[in-house]
Amino acid sequence: MLEVETMTYVEKKRVALTFDDGPNPLYTQTLLNGLRERGVKATFFLLGKEAEQYPGLVKEIHGDGHLIGIHSYEHVDFGACGSGEACEQVSKTDEILYKLTGQHPDYIRPPYGRWCDALEEQFQLIEVLWDVDPLDWNCKDAGTVERRILNKVEDGDIILMHDASATSVQAALDVIDSLTKEGYEFVTVDALIAD
Image (cartoon, rainbow, N blue to C red; front, side, top):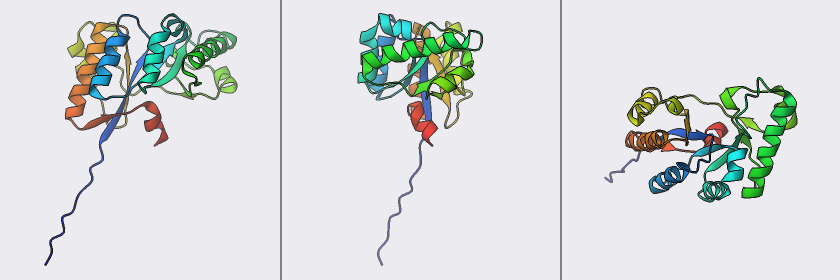
């Protein structure tokens, strides 16, 4: 009698790492190098003003296969500014990113998570918020940021981070290493939203 070996398929847990406020001339390159070394793709919600100043970094983010979304042009609160200003912030950033990548972004993360209804009427963008916010922008210890993420993260979560400090970048790379050991796979937000 033949024995049949059965294989069981275990689906990996998936999370999306996202980075707001870049590209940053001091820290984005280090982050990109670390992501490349680990074979990880992330999502970057870029500021138009920074993209304008550092086009080479935007092209590198795009060239490495990361997903690019709109944050705003100058990090304004869409809930507090007028609808005309909010639309201008998005339109201007979309135009800059299109010129640099040849693609119009499909995703937007409004600064502070505050939306403006006029944006929905004017643009065909998918709003992306987050599940885990370690407040990395306000912490100078990478270990603390990493613990805040590891203590909360679950399968399917979107993690909010920033590529604007050495602490945040180190914490992000440490999180990747830790969660990879726990069987997590890192995907861009479109993979989670499509499910």
